[in-house]
Length: 401
Image: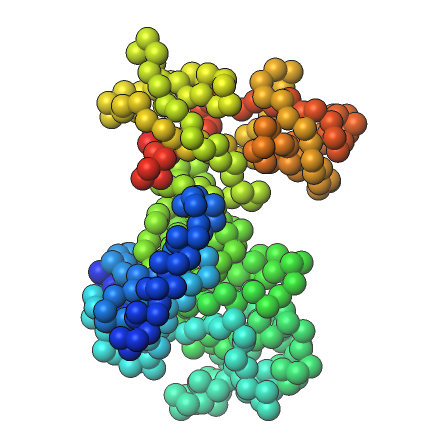
């Protein structure tokens, strides 16, 4: 059984009292220099008198044979969490179970876990075959069994023809396949992947994502995958874990996280192009119904929103409203702004529209579209379906629905 359970996991890196004071001063200064909390500023990880807390209050159950992706910006604690599962980082507090076995103090080599690193970590003086066979030789398996396992893994990854080559003679994609082959040849109960595609170009990343999806269907094991690329997270994961500053922000299927972000951070991090935000939007009640007012226009919220807000007895407050670019529709009436950027993507065009100082991004299908209407400098009128908007409390930044 290859389930993983993390209970109240915490990782703290001790630092000197002088470093604590210096970091607190720097964090305070940076925060003082930023007038608004929603302008892209990401606060430092929590700094205590004991040190820097990289991961805190991390609770997650990963099912047997599940593919879970940890995603978040650089420095959010996702790689640290992965390394604690692998045993490469000591757990400061909390409990780790692999299967039903308490694993905090089990040595990495005894956890039956394989890890694929960002930089491949291949032995340059060994052939592909020997790189893949190395761990099996250390385990003193019979030569015939080693040969069978290596060739089976090579066939699965379609690298049989390069088994006799050295890593320096391989492309980036081939090296990554070898690194994955070295992991799966051991038939581990868990495979950990730490940003394995970040060194590849865009085209190759797309190909390797497909390879990993196919690989997952061929081998029966649990995957934990770390990335800062939300496209990888959305395409690969059964569930994704969105992290920020060492804390879990949301856990769910890719579609759940996209359609129902728990807060402003998740809504802004997940989705390409990034979601549009309207700030300082009043939520008001008129004749028993809820309305929002965006740039002077009153919008009655959908029945879904009405029901949820009424059940929660939501008072009138200031909100942040999020609208996905794919939900912005070209209309004859609605909001009108000027097109400042028009990016032709083939089947769709990405527009940046200046709406009284707000930069609104719209994704418009090009089928049956007169391209002259989306040229630079043109006025563009648009609207959006009220049922597809997201409404967040401006103070707590939590989703009201």
